[in-house]
Image (cartoon, rainbow, N blue to C red; front, top):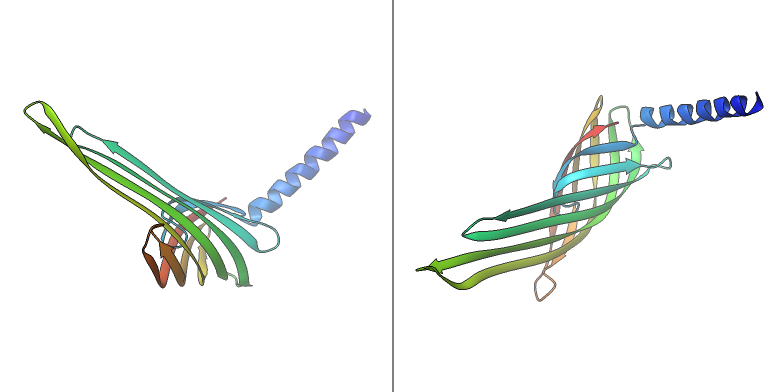
Length: 171
């Protein structure tokens, strides 16, 4: 009888903690587009202390008889809720993303393959800013503005204003 009672207590406590997490909308999935956060499918998780993390990933690969293209964008962003309101949260963020893009054009002439024409672009971007999270029930729109630093890892360096936008479903 005692093990059954202990199991029941553990199940009730576990269920109540999961119910609390669901009410707080800790988990978000959606789409993001931005210079700092990255572009693609996004997952965002909020911790109990008003801090959060966002992961963004966009993989793409296409191969045909004439060309091959590969594109990957991966981002990691740290978030902090500065001010909470009923439907709008003011959020500070700092993040970075890496973009890899390579395309190869394949040339054929009279059944003979000619040398490929390859273009490759790698870019690392980091920055910080402030934005707002506007909540509509279980959907939220995230708008951010900041400043970014970007390099192609060879000789180019760019710094400029940045905008990031995301659409999330909370569960």
